[in-house]
Amino acid sequence: MTMPVPVSTATTLADLTRRSGLDVLDHLEREVAIPVVDGLQAQGDLIVVPYAFVARAVNPLTTMWQEVPAEGVELLRSAAGGNPHTLVADPGTCRWTREIRDTMGLALGMIETSAVAYLIHPEHGGTGIAPGRYVVRRQRERDTERVGRFGNLGDRMIAD
Amino acid sequence: MSALRAGAHRVASARRLSDEWRAHGLAARPADRPAAEAAVAALYRLIDAPAPDFVWAPSPTAALALVHDDPRTFPPVRFRSPNLPRRPGDWPVAARLANLVQSQRRSLDRALGRTESWHYEWQRLDTIAEQALNAGVPVPRIVDMVVRDALNTTLRNCVRAPMRAELTPTTGGTDGMTWYGQHDAHWIGHYDVHARLGLAAYRRPDAELLALLAELARSTGWWWPGEGRCVMAERPTEIHTEPLPGALNGERRLHRDEGPAVRFADDTQIHVLHGTHVPTWVTTDPTVERVHAERNVEVRRSAIERIGWDTYIAQAGLRRIAAAGDPGNPGSALHLYDVPPGLWRRPARLLLVVNGSVEPDGSHRRYGLSVPAYFTDPVAAAGWTYGLSGEHYARLVRRT
Image (cartoon, rainbow over all chains, first blue to last red; front, side, top):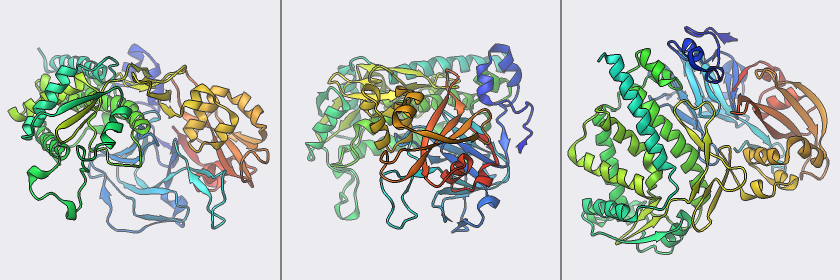
C-alpha cells in the first residue's frame, strides 16, 4: 500500500523532473513527493522486505543495532564501485544491523525505523520506507556455469 | 538585500563554482606540469621532505607500472606492528602526506561546523536547490547539494570509480598511495566553495594546504608520491560524458557509443556505455556467446542492447514459455524463456525483467537473469531471485 505523502500527491521524482518550468515549481512547493511504501519494494537489484514475510528465514544475531548516521549507510555499490544504494533517515529514527542470519544467504541487513527512511540511488532515484521492520536483500541468479558442491548452491549474486 | 535574495545569490554562485570544479575533473588536456610539480614540491616541504624528482607517464596504467617496478621508492604504506616504523620521520612520504591531509580535513570540517553531531537536512536531497531555499533549507546545506553531492556523484562515482576498476590491478604489488589530482576535485571543491562563498573561514595552514591541493586538482591527473621521486600521470586526452538521468545539479556519467569513453595518450582505454563500465568487446564485437559467458548483468545488458534484444533472442534460440505483469512495475512484463540445451553448462531458464526507472530517452532498461529450469511462472521465478515465493513477490508495491 502506498502511504499518503506530505503536501503533494504520489508524483514521482522522475515525473517531476520531466516536467518543465512552473509546473515543476508548483509541485515542489515544500517537499519532493517521494512515494512512501510500507510493503515490499525493489530498487534495482535490492529489495526491501517487510520482516513478517521472512520472519522464519531471517533472524538478527545481535541485540547491538547501529543508528543510521547522518551521512547515511551505503548498503551496496556496483562492481565498478559507483552507484551506491544509500539508506538515509532522520538521526535517531532508524537503526540497522548487518549481523543477521538468512537461510537464503541474500540479506544485507535489517532495518528498524520509527519514521520514514529513504533508499537513494543515483540512477533509480529515491524511495520512502514507512516505519517498521524490514530485511534488505540482494538479488541472485542461477550460476549457468557450474552446479555447487552441495547441490542447492550454485547460485550467484547479481553483479552489476 | 533580503536574506532570501542573498541566499539565492549564493546558490547561483555555488552552481557556477560547481560547474568550474566539474570542468576541472573532466578536463582532457595536457597537465600543467610546472604548476603540478610546484604544488607537489610544496607538499613535500610541509612534511619536511626534500623536493622529489618528477617522472611523467602518459596514463595511470603507465604510471602504475613505474610505481610497481620500484618498491624502494614506493614502499608499502600499510603497517602491522612488526614492521611499524619507530619514529614518525621514518614513515614513508606517502603515509606522512596522507596523515597531513587527513588531519587537515578534520580541521576543515570543524571550521564548517561538521562535527559528529552535525545533522543533515537529508530529506531535501534530490530537491531543486532554488525550491529548497524558498522552503527554508539552510544555505550551507543547499551548497552541499549543489557542490559536494553533485561533484561526488559525477567525479567520484561516475568517473573515478570505473577508471579505478579498469586501471588499478586488484592483485600484485603495492601501489603506494594514489592521489587523484583532477579526480579529487569533488572533496577539494567542496571545501573551496564554502570558503569562496564566505560560509567558512579556515585556519591559515589549512587554507594554504587546501590551495596546494586545489592547484593539483586544476592541473594534473593521478599521482604517486614516493621517497625522493614522484610519479605523475597525464590527464586523459578524451573524456566523453552525458547527463545523469534526473540530474538536478549538472551530474554527468561516462558514455560513448562508438569508442572508449576515456582515452589516454598511450591509447589506454576505458569503455563505458551510459555509465556502465564494460569490457572492450561490448563496444567492438558483442556476440551471443560472449554475452552468455559474462557474469556481470549490466555488461550482459549493455552487450545485448548493442546486438538488439530481438536479434539476441533469435540468435540465442530462446523460446518464450510464459509472460506476466511485473507486480509493482506498472506497464512492464516479466518474460520467461526456455534456453536451448548446450547454451549454458547447466539447465536454467532466462527471465527477462524491466527496470523500474526510466532512461533519459524514455526507455526502460531490460535485464536477462538466469533462473532454475523448473520454473514455469515468471512471477515465481522473479520471486526466487530475491529468495521469496511467487505469492510474496506478487505483493511488490513499487519498483524503482
